[in-house]
Each structure stands twice: as structure tokens, then as C-alpha cells.
Length: 181
Length: 365
Image (cartoon, rainbow over all chains, first blue to last red; front, side, top):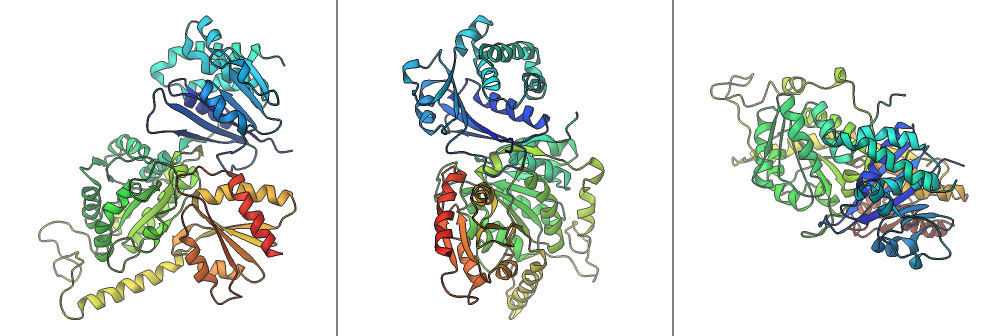
């Protein structure tokens, strides 16, 4: 079976959806995989909804967008409403239950619940919620090591914010460890 | 392990490719979904002694391109959809005057202002000339970020070989996708001087400089004397005919295929994913991807025709299908070419093209 994974990441503009996608794609490339990242957002940015699709594969990637993703990272409720029905059979959704009512999760979908905002708040910065969620995804969808993604932060975070790399790496680890193996 | 690849958008790859392929000047006006091209070149070109100009409009940008080309300087512009419409007059003047230049169209949904989603609706505009009068652009259609980079080398080389506008026709997916790209080692980058040297016999160099025949140099597209324009068009026709040597295409698993999908750019790669899954289910599907849209690789396509059907997949209301039909016209019966259009503005997945491919396979049997 070829090593193929895809994920749609979605949330409000400003929650760091694009950074998550960029980071995962960069780490995938540095791990020797083929990768594609494609953003989808409207003309309005901040406060609007944003999503991106990342595909990781051993082979050159064809379609960069997927109708029925094998996995999703859902950071807010509008994103759950949009993407939960599209999740592939047998797929997994990592859901930020700090902002999504658990009652909305479909019983026939495999959900990994992570209180990303609360955990990020405990780390001292609620903006780290995206990294907590991505850490949880890395455990739920094994393809890349936590270390590979932490290492890739150095290439994805601009030098202006380089001082925030350690706390982002920590947030990835916290999310990773919060999910049962 | 050090990975030589860099993760960049198709648009950024265009910019890096241009800078490495000898581009000296960029003129343009912002429009989504291609803004990363000017953003990157605004940094890259001045670093290398080149010029970046944000023009006051697309009309101004294309006329700056005409001016740079007339002076033998490797230059480019980029835009999307409606921006290219505004540039058509200048492109026609460049073609009529034998002036080289590279233009990039990262297509967006149309007509009119449309949206910022993907589309292949500018196919006709790109390959049939686009502006007034009989003129043709060489048109290259990248499908990946790596091709966005690589094709810039080809584009500048062709523009200067034929003294003609060359158009890179991408779309919102090709421009916005981020993928690993390998850049040329700096030693393989093309110095602008190599391209500029090739223009020694005709470029504008200022007052008093004469051509090899001792007469003043003149680049123009106006020919009013009796028979002069006809002569000009004869020369242009010869040039366009000679461009057929540049035909390029890509065949994937066409040898044993009952059905050959014909698609270019982003749609071709989406079709490849669907094709892979259909192959796993035992269907014999192949892919023919025109890399040059003008000249269209008609002979290569016709060579595949015996015993096969074609399904043209494109993100418009039916444009390339006309060139495909013409390529196989008269070869073998009228129902040879099927067509399916993805509506402009949609972000298509493999599932969206799998269905029409299955349907076309049914019609093969």
C-alpha cells in the first residue's frame, strides 16, 4: 500500500491554519516525501473561514485538492459543519473541542477531541492552539515523526518570530502526548 | 539529510525561474491569484541589477514590456484574466513588430471580474492570438510548481529565438499550490547578456546606430505601402509555421489505453489521480497532456487515435476540445472525441473527474 495521506485543515482566518499546513508540508518534504499544500480562502481574510489541503505521498502528487479527505483538523464550528460530512469512510477528524460543541460530532465518524485553545492557554498563549491540534493529528495519523515537524519550524517561522519556535515546538509535543497511542 | 528542494508556490517558482533564466525587467500591476510573482521579483530583480516596476495599469505594463523587448532586454509581465485582456493590444504590437517578451497568465474565473478561483477559460485568448490581427503567441502550460520554474527558461529562450511573445498559461491552482522545487545551480543560470547578445542585429540602441545593412533601425507594425503588409504577414506566417518544431507533450500510460484523457495544466494532474484509481480497478485509461498549447501537438495526438477514444477534460465551457477535434478530424468516425467541462471557479478533486472518465469508458465498450 503506498504511503499516502491527505488532510484538510480549517478554521477562522487568524487561527494559524496556513501555518499548520505549511509546517506539515515542509516537514513532509524534509522527510523525503512528495508534498503539496494549497490554500483556499476568500477575498476577506481575518475573521473569515480559511482552509488548506496538504497531501503527502511517496509518488508525485496529482490532485492537490480532495473531496473526501482521509483526515481533517477542525479548529472551529463552521469548519466542522463544512467538512464533517465530507470526511472519508474510515477517516479521522481532529476536533478543537474548546470551540466546537461535542454534541455536533457525528457518531459514525472517528473523532479525536482535543481542547486546543485551553491547552494553548495553559502554555501561556492561546495562539498556540493550531500547534496543539497539529501535534494531536501527528499522533492520530502516523506518517511523520513529532521531531521532524518540530525541526521544520526553523524553516517555516520567519526570523522575526524565531524566538517563538521553542514554545511552538512545546505546543506540538503537548498535543501529541494528549492523544492515546 | 539535506534536502535540495525548496517548498514554494507555483507563483514564486515563476519568479525564481525568471530570475535564473536571465530576466532583467519586470513590469506589472497587482491582481489575485498571481501576486506572489511581483512580490518575489520586487526583491529578486534589484538584487541582480535588474529593474522592477509596478506600472500604473496593465496597459502601461505591456507597453513597457514592448519597449524593453525592442531594446533587446529580457523582460516579463504577469497578470490574470481581465489583466491579460487589457494587454492584448500591446501583445499584438509586439507580435507585429517581432519583439520578444514573456507574459504569465495565472487564470482566474471569468468572464468579467469573475472570481479568484481556478479556470482555463482564457485558452482561446492565449492560443488563437488574443489581440487584433493575425498573430500567435507561443503558449506553455505548466502543471506543477517545478514546471513553473523550468518553463521560464524555455519561455525566455523561445521569446528570443523567435522574437515573439511567449505566454505561460497557468491558473489559480498552479499559481497557489506549494510544492518542492529544485532550482538550477547558480552556475547553470542564464545570464541576461546571453539573451541580449542574440539581439545585436536588430535591437534599438539609440540615435545614430544602424543595422548591419547600414540603414537606420526601425521596429514597427505599421505597413501602409502597397503590398508591404501582405509581405509582413507572409513572414509572420513562415515564423508561426516554423514554431511547430517546438511542440511538446507528455504521455502517461497511453500505450495500452482504450480511453485517452486529454487535459492540460492543473486539470491534467487532477485527471492523473483519477486515472491511477481507475487503473487499479482494471480500466485502461491513459493521459495525453499538451505542454505547448500553441503550437498544439496535433500530430502526436493524431498518432494515438487509431483504436482509441479521447475524453477532453478542461475547466471551461469547451475550448481545447476544438483543437483536439481538429487534430483527429477525418481519421476515424465522428464520435471519437468526448468532452467534459469543470465549471470555472470550482476547486476540482479527482472524484470530480473520475465520474466522467468512467462514463466515457462505458461508451468505449
